[in-house]
Amino acid sequence: QSTREPLPRLPKLASTVCFMSADDASRNPGIPVPFGACRPEGTFAFVSYARADSAVVYPELERIVAHGVRVWFDEGIAPTSEWPEEIAIAIDRASLFVVMVTPAAMASRNVRNEVNAALRWGKPVLAIHLTRTVLPKSMELQLGSLQAILRWQMDDSSYARTLARALATSGPE
Image: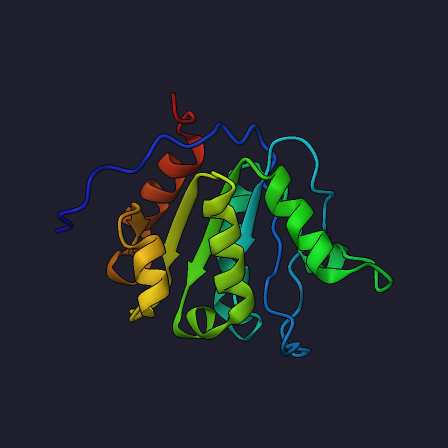
């Protein structure tokens, strides 16, 4: 049983969540991309994760899509585009920032930079802990006081309800 406060009120996602893969360090060619990318326009959420975690993250993205949301990810960045600029634009335009927390994500400089930018720019942040993860001191400082979904501690039914509530809740007042 968690001692944390209830989930924060998040912006209504209005069937538009966009997804950005943060960590371009390694491609996982054996893991198929689950769907095509949308454009980071309108109301959407930026989802940050480590590329090495594609196998566990992609099913989570499909869960988000099942809630009627669109998803944008790094496959949508043109090869001639400036990667950091595209990420910064997507975070800046996002209505919600979601970080998929795993040891690989917390080891990723890109993921840590994205979390820092989202918080600095005042984005609502939802951390989904996919596995038990010890946060580095910098991320403990940044994420430690925020509500999180501890996916690794939940059965599928509880997680589905919690995720649905987080995606459907109205934004901060």
